[in-house]
Amino acid sequence: MMMKEDSNEFSEDWQKWLAEYGSRLMLFARQQTRCEADAEDVMQAALIRTWKTHQGKPDDQVVGLAYTNIRRCAIDLGRSDDRRRRREDQAVQERGEQVAWFELPEDDTSRALQVALTRIPEKFREVITLKIWGELTFDQIGKALDISPNTAASRYRYGMDAMRKALEGESAVIRS
Image (cartoon, rainbow, N blue to C red; front, side, top):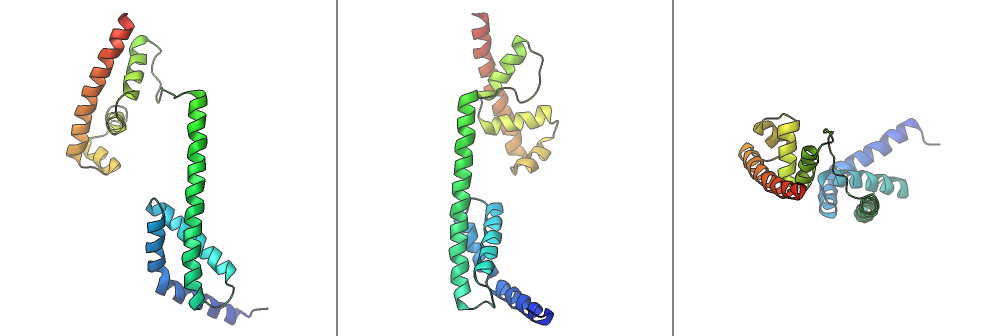
């Protein structure tokens, strides 16, 4: 049985090891993943896997094992995300794309708005949604989407033009 003093020493050794190699390992994790949050998750999972595999004080072999575990955890995460995405895409194909993101009265104008909104590019759709239904300013939209307020304003203008064109096409269909 490990004494409390030995346990503290054991923990301090791993803390020193992590302080020395942590930033290098995190850099590698960032290169192996799609985003910062995934890199942090992969790093944590890999460190736990490394610690469980290498019981005892860290030595020279632990660094290589940690890099290997980061790579394996990143591959596992990527495969998991890909499987989830395929399941979601399949579900959308089976059910069909849902058009209504918000509730509107069920009349021809409302349906035309919903259809027109689905036909414009995502970058315009998100700004229009935040501006009209979220009641945000362009400054707030810019912060929320990590774009400049001027970009938010121009996307709103271009999006509204795209909506007008889509609605003209919808009204022609309704009149037919």
